[in-house]
Image (cartoon, rainbow, N blue to C red; front, side, top):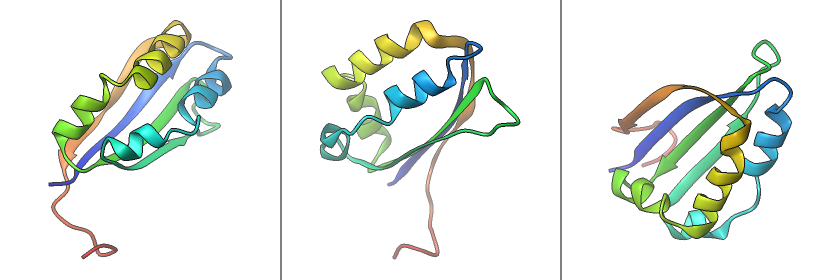
Length: 100
């Protein structure tokens, strides 16, 4: 079942663009690991927040991706730039009018 992870990452003042750059680096490994969609966004009304929307083949695929060296390196690089404020939702997708 498709798994969604929709979240917010609080970033330290002035660090938003650096975090976005880290999270938007091209990665074929994510697709190979079962990532169907990985979108990073911003909202100027929330300058210290980065928004991330992920769709995965399964919750297990998402969890396994956290062991990839490239993912672990990106997390390590981004961590000092984060404020520690995180939010979001995780859920199993039950359908879509865009997919069969």
